[in-house]
Image 1 (cartoon, rainbow over the protein chains, first blue to last red):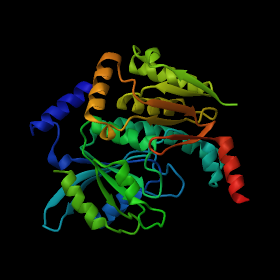
Image 2 (image 1 turned 180 degrees about the vertical axis):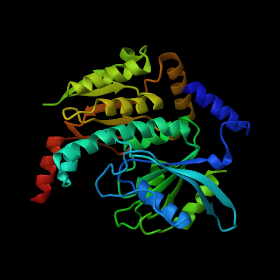
Image 3 (image 1 turned 30 degrees about the vertical axis):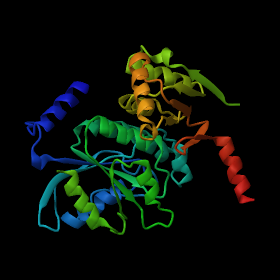
Image 4 (image 1 turned 180 degrees about the horizontal axis):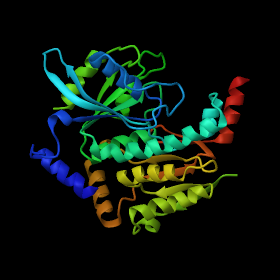
Length: 213
Length: 132
């Protein structure tokens, strides 16, 4: 892995990468469960393709396999275009308890199945890290940003030299606190959004252009 | 009763990343809370999550993980330099890693310089007190 990452970074620095075509630019959505990755994926796809990409749910681990939407083209205010493959990943967590799904009203067998699929989803998300060109880390702005999962995800992206934009989601909620997220990750670009209602989404798209430079 | 097991850095220093992660996970699966001197590398943290996911079963529900590491931005240049030398000579022993089984540890909160560990029981007691 380390050798592959080294050569990938070296070729990136030399602006020559025969393995990566610009129109195959992979933009990943990463983060803990229920941060709003799939809602954001749907917002992007609705805005630019007129269709949804993923199903969303208030029960954690709704996305349990990697989903890819190819050829998403967005435009900025200057008329510039950016085309990428959008990769919606399962939320990364350190624990999965099927009983939590039962508490949310699921039947025991369905809950166990969901837990099993969710564990596989987490493994896939981590394995796919190496394939990303840029990543939007989607965090729930109402929750504690200092969780080790957030730090591990961002740390691993940094170690791989993958550009990161933090989307602090759910800013429409009263409990949202953008300042805490900015204090936790001062070295990263952070944009507060509400993926559900489209709040500040134009600013988010502008930041995507900077991320992909 | 909650059992803590201290893992000194020299115990894992010469292990391969996989063996290091497996050693820590083995202790956690014995329902003990690991307090490790130093921290894992970023890739090893990701490996720990991956291996944890592979091991999840109705009995083992995962882990809670937290790392306290000195904020280098807050350190004086001399302190930072000392830290670099210590890392080169002794390995990265700075910081502290806590890993607990999810069946016992409900959450670990970082503030970011202090760690608060909530066990399942303490969380239930806290919620009951709040209701009153």
